[in-house]
Length: 219
Image (cartoon, rainbow, N blue to C red; front, side, top):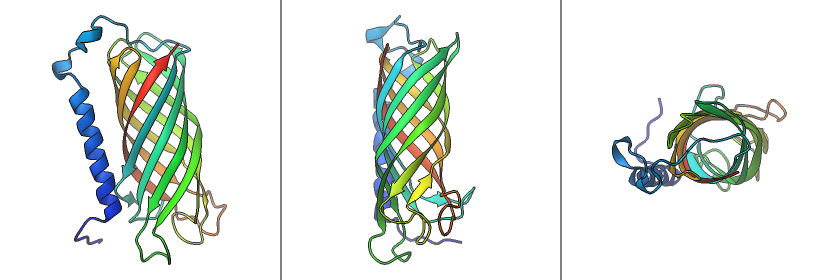
């Protein structure tokens, strides 16, 4: 069993960031389920052809064994989001999503390798789908799944594995529409990282990523 007497700096940073983002979302969210007063009566439906542009950031304070076998890793992600509503019905809509990662950082224990325990990368998730519920509401829950890749400056998640990793993920969350075209997002995703046996070893890494962001929507 792992014993920890103090949080590592990366873990403190990620958990503090998550707390600040969640607090910000709560502060912007009207109480008692009321609509934002400035846009009461507006339509919040996401129609076919609507585009979403967004920025989000999140992290995982630890990795766990689910599909992979690597523990004691923290993950930080910064993403740029593009989405397009492919189909819309009375109660839900189907959205295609694409995420660009200008920054992806894995923090590992100092004992793992010589040199820096902070490994930087970038990547792309070109294939994603998101189902948005509650078409007429300003609060829209969603479920999502996607697959992409990340490329790092060194082997991840362990030495002698691979710099290149595939990143399938599934998740859920909620978007709070401050206006019909502006929304805050808070979500969770189970993020898996694996080189699919293209590297010298493939232990895999699973992360519970909590994230928040902001999006705007255009026709």
